[in-house]
Amino acid sequence: MFFALALQILALCLFFTADSFALLANVTVDDQLGDPLTLNKIVYSPASEWNFGPTCRTCSAHPDPSQTSSGTWHDTYQFPGSENDNKTLTASYSFMGSHVYVQCVIALSSTNPPGRTEMTFFLDEEEAGTFLHEVDPVQQTGFLYHVTVFSKEFDFEDNHTITVQNRGQTHNQSLLLLDSIIYSYNDDTQSSPGRPPTHHSKVAALAGGIVGSLLGLMLCGVSIFLLRRRSRGPKPILALDPFSAHCIPSTSGPARDASARKSARVDDGEASVELDVVS
Image (tube, rainbow, N blue to C red; front, side, top):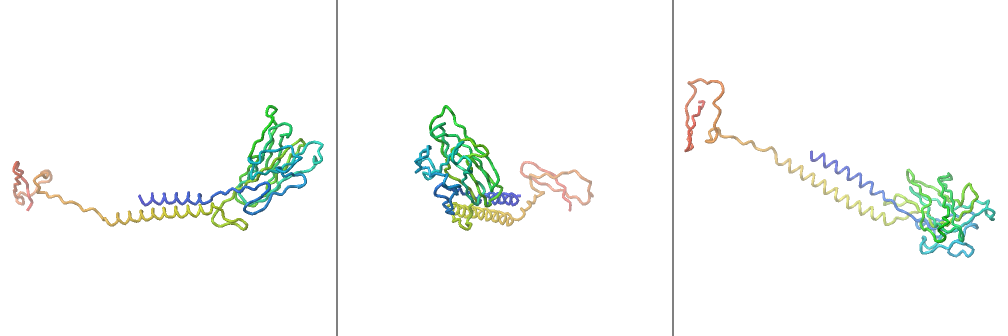
């Protein structure tokens, strides 16, 4: 019984341990600096229609650099009748992972800058979602930072391409302030090509050593318990003396041959008992 319970506990430990080793590592792809692991960068198309926010003098949006990822963002703006009104403005990035997030800065003002934002998202060239922010007439100034405008979890880790498109099927005005793209991948102790190990790998190795030691101690404890239990053997059976002064045998039962009976007296100092002893 104890051994079966120990096996069940061991199986549960192995299950949760294996699951804990699949640590998700987040990688922030900065709008300007790119991917710190692969060194790849976001592709802006057409490049001439995107502005590097911190140094853009013609841009009307000026967020606080200290509130953005690495102090940077990319700016693009379209409105009906503008020179780029009929152009498709996109920002794309290819990655290997199981999750992806797009974070932007959102302007709250209705003018200077016009804060209306409309985006369409594509995953592997297929439309995957939209985002729309309409300005509040009451709120006239300010920005929202690290706004997750899109997120997606995949069934398994694979190569994907995320594309952010300003506007969509409409031709309304839209201001897009791209801050970063974040993707997650299962970080094990062996890195994929072009992906150096991170500190999560060290954590997984340390956790594996600790859990392995605990499981080893558990197995040792179970083995010692079983050996001690086996070495004890069956318990001895105590024999009762039928002639003890405190034991009065029953006189009921079938009649015996009178010639085979003898009389015996047991005296404990206080009472006498007549016993029939078979010779």
